[in-house]
Length: 150
Image 1: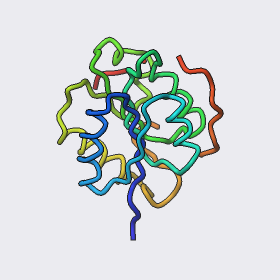
Image 2: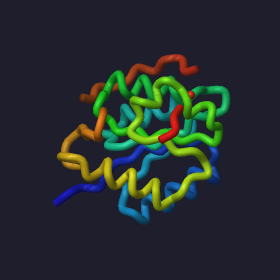
Image 3: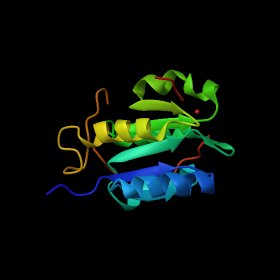
Image 4: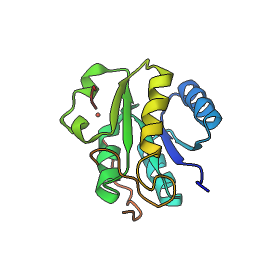
């Protein structure tokens, strides 16, 4: 029996976070929320994470920093990046993301991308996933100081 996929949603807008969480839980994802880079690191260290949905605009913090920290510790971790600012999605690191979505995004498209990630070989049954292009030890909290289009 497959277990629920554990998804870390990194989003600092409470209303957006609540709306996405509700949709993802209805789709049977186990969702953990983080509103900052330091909160995301803490959540990552607390439990195994299968997928990450990462907003690049986190107030004064930049989401690309946490993206690189996650990839450094768990290179096969599927990370879908989102942003309302198209220029953030043109970052050179976008090629390493599993997918890139500009806000507002199409929820069915997001669900399709997450489903593809969760159906990768051994997804949600082992501690790491393999998604198209891209194992886990705790991250150290580092000072955090942005991402792509499909």
